Image (tube, rainbow over all chains, first blue to last red):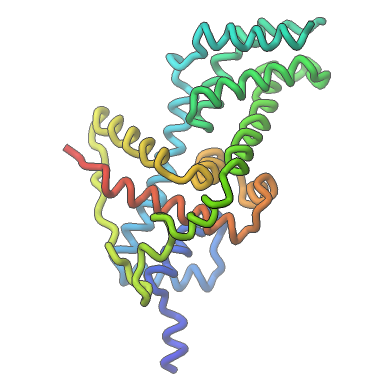
Length: 91
Length: 185
């Protein structure tokens, strides 16, 4: 009974691994249940879970901001370099 | 030659550059990616004109970006791979033998205004620069470009286990770095 109970309980290390995996793939039912239970009793991992999701959200926002920032442009020098490279290939 | 490459560069160059910079984070690499895209475009016959030139060029650019990331990862010396196990992003530094946190994650204060938001992004950016190149590249592919794990494994020629361990280390490292370096107020 005792060993069975142990298997149901995740350590924080195991929980952190499962949390990271949850960002990539849907968790198995069993992992999901174990994680849910662990997060219910563990404040540190709950925080960790929130922060990993947050980091992902923010890096995606950073990507969109860079993509949409019209002030970011190829420099004149860079354009000239690229044009030279194109010309050398065309002749 | 009917294709006007100069027009492509003038009309779409800046857009392509931003697209590349958002994924590679390095201005020189982003410029290289745009140049490679243009060179591939003049050689290619596949542009039919029924898709917009921008969409077509972006499609080429995506491949060039992955090529550069792959190179970034391959060029890592083997010793770095071994070091990775002992580096500060390894899993064991975060937990004791029983699997408890050595340092419990602390609350991160969220940026409350535009200025703080900017500072937060630059802190996060700095933390990404501190990651080992290999981890940074796979993190960008997965969390920024949202490539699925299967294609990451294929592109980088690594196992699924390898991929999730690397992603885990990247995320652990980033989170810890933010915790240390992000101070509000």
